[in-house]
Image (cartoon, rainbow, N blue to C red; front, top):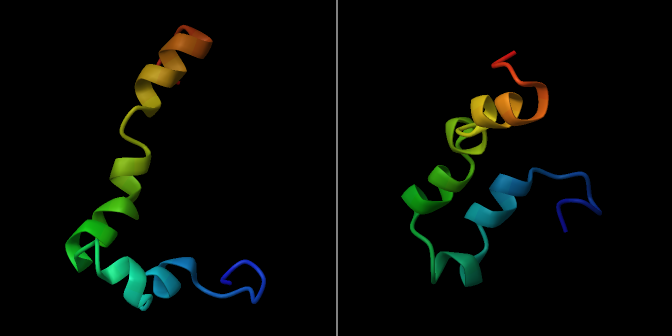
Amino acid sequence: KAWREEGDFRAAIESNPEVRKYLTPEQIAHAFSPERQLRHVRAIFRRVFGTEG
């Protein structure tokens, strides 16, 4: 829905009752955390480029 309507995916997830049955607001926030998404970036750079970039 967010993709089709150019909306905010996180807001759509947070307001979805089906998702909220299974995930707390804290769990949703954790899933969208930039730190979580980038936590392995140094290892990836080392593996791909042989350096930390």
